[in-house]
Image (tube, rainbow, N blue to C red; front, side, top):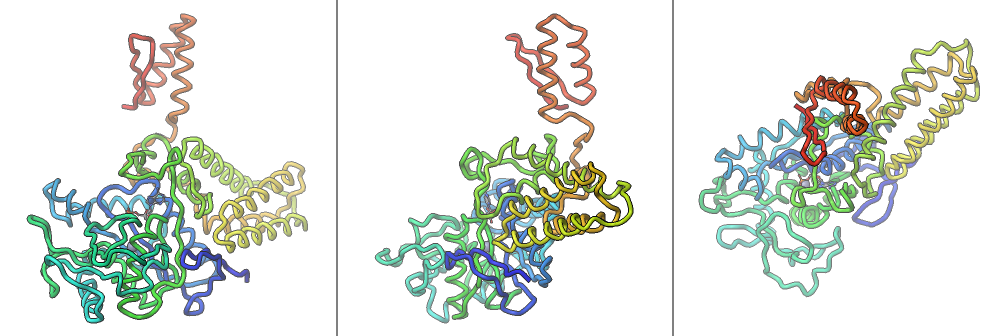
Length: 479
Ligand code: AMP
Ligand code: ZN
């Protein structure tokens, strides 16, 4: 078996991956904060986590994966209050949407999906343990973690805490490295805010303690792989380490894997910048779920990925190419027998595919192995050199590929129906509409009004309305 190597943020090295218990991998996956629909940037990290899971499974490991749903934090409390509903009611809607979105992208469900609000008692217990060991103090009803009591603080994000003002506190869940401070484990309620009545007083948990408590509850004191996007390294994961290792005195996670960001025009896609798209928005405008999954999976997770319409189009045509090839192999009539070259060609593609993924999940290289095979097999078929028995070999290579990429099965229309999105698969895409609009403009210019009207009617039948402005511009929208 090939040696699997992962890049570990903790050591900064790409290391051989060996789980603690042979044959079993325990994974903790930081899930979404369910204050709104997740955006494509979030899904870059979730797709990476799914590729990681599927790859380990393909190598014969049993996976025990826990994913949290952060259903209480600063933003959720604010948003639920603004909407005048309970936290539960507010977050239920976005949890449902998130799980539906995951299905659209063929993300396998982890063994445990844990809601923070259903684990308050586990968090309280962990805070009590930290208090017994002298890691905490209280101020105005809130409990803080004293980072000066944990000398290893900063070991993941490599921040230097020496010389930092001790006792300075931060109440927010999210803050930057320059503000490394004692952080809130438990927050006293502000007037009108939802709170839990507990042994450590009324209040609500900080974000970081949620993950520490839930990770250790399901996976024990030490787990194999902890993952998330790079923005979680500090403070979230640094604080999780302080909380968990402070309480147990044992190593919390053995491998830390972080996905680089999805960018838009070289800036991180994020809600706060406003440069984000949800899956549903993309789907409603003609993008197929398989294109999104393929695009996000195709770039190795430690490389930044710039999100663009061209990238999506490229992904769509790659998926099309894979599906067309698969159909050609399945339905083609080939002469009896086997060609030894094709057999070894397919075996080599599988080997290259596995080796690429073993190298810290190099998905781009893994794809290259499959596309090379497709090219060679197509040439062999065109020349009549592809034989009946080669079908099995080539399909086996495609299966190896699809166990990870999960885009071969053409169920995009079904996926969209499940989301209640009426994307007419025979209807025109944005690019096609633009082309027709340009064609109509050209017809009008040469005063061919019959052609211009025909195009207008054709678009109307596909549900696209044109608005001619006085200055000669044309705007279009879908009904
Ligand atoms: P949140 O819901 O904000 O806790 O984020 C959920 C996951 O999405 C975390 O693992 C983040 O690191 C990740 N994430 C947020 N923005 C991006 C982005 N632009 N690209 C990749 N991952 C992201
Ligand atoms: Zn987390």
